[in-house]
Image (cartoon, helix red, strand yellow):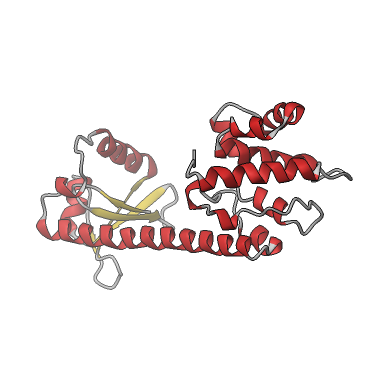
Length: 242
């Protein structure tokens, strides 16, 4: 485990020669002296980390918990007094920021691939690319990516599009069950009924439809599916992404 504190940086691993102890290594001797005052700091020039101590697990937990309890700053980097250590932490910050940018770019590229697959009506590609942990955001939808084919037989672009939205997650956040939203709308559905729902509610309704019929022999009413897809497309065309 790597730990960065205002007093210094340490790398902590199990001490394989002393069961129950943790081996705490550092690049600078002062970091160990400041974080663990009174401990005997060993110098080991032949090792990757030049300075180290071995202390009981409970002692390390207590001392590090005290460091956390003492946090009173709004910005970690600005709390570092050692100029060289501050600059080293800044380089770490830059590296991890780059990791974040790569993650965002990767997710966005995946969304672009999903949208292109929807435009090409490639149901299998949409399903393979979709990730329930990263559902396709409403504001990335474009009218030409909304499928208007109500066919439900697999491979179905309507079913694949339904799975680009995580209805379970959305309903959990809004205190609803996907089946509740579907049943309520199914009882009295018309184009006007759909107009009263938000884009997220309509996508959740399509998601609930897919989950409802996935384990049955029947298919939903194609007219119902078409009107629902039409309503979703109208929301997107109007820029109503809520």
